[in-house]
Each structure stands twice: as C-alpha cells, then as structure tokens.
Length: 275
Image (cartoon, rainbow, N blue to C red; front, side, top):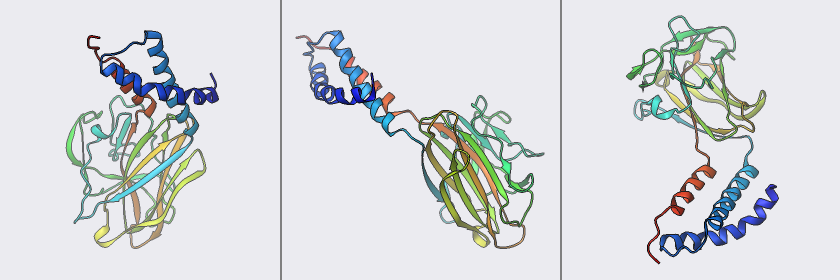
C-alpha cells in the first residue's frame, strides 16, 4: 500500500473510529472482528503515514545554566537515560570515568580538537546513578570534567558523536568552562550545521565552572546517522582557559504511532456489557 493510498483511506477511518469506540464503551458493539481489525489497521497506517511524511533530520536544542543563586537540578543519569550515559574522566584519561552498564554504546569517546584529554575540576553539579559499570552506583558525586590538554587556546575543546536511530531521541549534555567563552555546535551528518550558539557562554569570575545543560531533541534521517556535538573555546578571558565535558545521557523516545496504537488497542479491548 502506498503512502498516498494510506492518506486517501484515512478520512474514512477517522470518521468510523469515534463511533466505534463509543459503541464499544457502551456495550453495543455490533461489528465483527474483521471490521474491528480494519478500523485499527487504518488508523495505525494513517498515523504512521503522517509521521513518515514528517520524518526527516531535525534538531531542537534548549539550554539551562546553573548559577549559585539558581542551581541546576542534580541529575540522576539512570532516570534520564534508557540507551547510554557517560560521566567524567578516568584517572588516566582520555576514557570516560564511568558509563551505563549494558548501554548500547551510542555515545562515542570524545575527540579533542587540539591535543588529548586532561582531567580538570568539574562544576559543582553532582550526579547520581545506580546502573554504572564501576562503581555501580553513586548518590551525588562531583566528577572531574574532560578538557582539551592545550589550555588557553582558541579552538581547543572536544567533539562527541552520538549514533541516531532514525526516530526521536534526546541527549542531555552537561558542559562547563573556565576563563573562556564557549561555542556549542551541533551537526547532523559529517558537516551539516543544525545549531550554532557562538560565544554565548562566558566563563570567568562568579560564573567559572558554572554548569550548563544542553537538551538536544533530535531525529536522524536514517538509523546509524550521526549527531555530532562540538564544544570549543571561542575567546579567552584569562589564564588556563578551557571548556569541559561533564556528562551525557541519551534516551530513545517512544514514537507517537506506537503510543497511539497501544492506546487504541486498549480501548478496543474494553469489556462489553450485555446487549
């Protein structure tokens, strides 16, 4: 069945559906199983057809900055990630200090733009989790961040690749910095810029190491396509200037088509009262 056919049948399905569901709820169902199946199938195909038409690479990004007077909520990575999470830096670097046990590995190791990773003091933000590799759990640990080893250099920073599913996902990315202006850029594919916040975050004085959360809601055009995140020093405000990565949490978002069909299926299975 082509998408055009799906759309042409959809109005009939939508016209039938409300009456059918009301009849089910009132115990006056007089359609056979084949008719019921057709209604469910047409509604499902209509929903999937609309989503297929709209499905393309897309990104929406929100930013929150935590200050002493208005701190960010302390994140629980287990609650925020159902695919993968990564945290801080190991003692020897450049590997992450910890990550989700059983995660799907969608978050790559970072690539540093000038040299290699170094461990630097992170923000005051504390992270909790209970599904890590080592240690398994933590209830509010302050972590060291991952920074480019070449300090006080414009263009130093890091890149991280996140593998897409071809369906909606959300990545939570915690960053910070010291004596620098940070530039956050997101790419879909190798070089298509979809978000560029240039020199928007100034670190220095009372804002040094202030935690920042970027919430990146995205859909890649195809499974396996890459969302690339880059965070780098745009300008220098003092000595030892750098930007750093604290943590990333990644979750797949249930598709509306699946949710709609589950809800409709539940209504159609409601018990019937006597005629």
